[in-house]
Image (tube, rainbow, N blue to C red; front, side):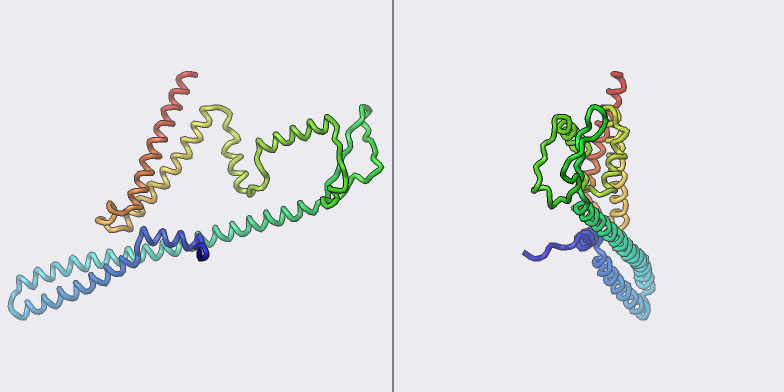
Length: 257
């Protein structure tokens, strides 16, 4: 198996599969040839005295030139879209590399930091001093045997449960902040439904935007037959149906309060 394609290559290949700039350029070439042929036929008809035929041919040439201008505008729009897409991908790649680098740096610093053992407190509030040192590195863990008391064990168990609820710290700071901010205010079933309804609405808006851009860039006769456009339309209808069901659940929940 060869090397896997990069995300930039996959996204660019997908976009130009949906919006074929090469096909638009071929169509532009065909229209240019058709306009030139009509011009020559009109000139021939005019020399032969067939003014009506020449007038009809020139009228057809005018229609072809109008379609030619539309194709030029479509190609320019495709090129502009491709440039913006590459720019957005470059920015995202740079952010991803920066986040991964910061996470790796944090892991290295955390691994080198010493681990300190805190002895349990006496009833008088004073610590029991150990004869051995209370600070050591991670490499010395296997050389010491730690026997925690019941209170320390209970505290560790409580901390473990808290970590399971909060989640691992290996997430990036941006993802963790986003998850916490979206879930912080969810304290009831109706809050959960409202949050789900909002997320579905955002997805629906994005899909509608994609379909509008597809209709703008694709030929009118190509839009209904495009497989990706059909799939996106089906997904959009499914999202709308799901959001409508969530809306019904919200209304029923509010009525039963």
